Image (cartoon, rainbow, N blue to C red; front, side, top):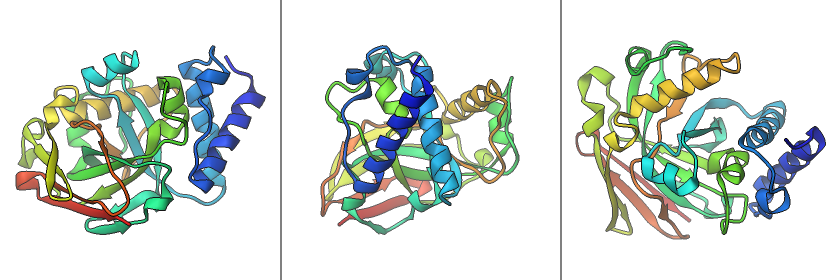
Length: 261
């Protein structure tokens, strides 16, 4: 594993890249023996520095929840990152493109918890009982590490490539709709680019939330009431450029729009 000084130095590099909307060289190119445990340690130092600076944590994101993405990255379980209050946008938002180093959009569902959720044996049904409502969400991916040759260690270190999220559509309680069958059509500039069904997330999007609660238990922590949990994408990432408009149609769960300027 990397020593604490190296971990702190990389976390500082990522914080500076976040401030300047730039990218740094791949961690795995410089430290080829870095492990997944190292990457979460880097993310943890970066998170704590942001909390100490006054940013407020509002939730967590889960990534790599599809079999295809796990196979592509060589990892056998999802990953996760943190979400701060200043990264949340409302439906119809005009989003500054220069806030990010690069922009890709993923289609997801967000679970808003009404009670704490903890392992070690948290199940899909525990998640549904602890959920106040589920709402459509778009995740804005943003990488502060050069993309070519990037590995899962690089991605996790970079807060699982999370940049922001747009919440919208029609919130629903879990007992109002079969979440497996939530479908979405993602458009860029009025042209359809991606489609997907939420069952692509581990057969049910709540499964990833249960996984996260059990993962947190291993570290003596839990998911708290009021947290927003992005459950994972059920489309491929869609690249976005300055000036692009984005619309995602979730059928009965409504639509989300945003524009990058």
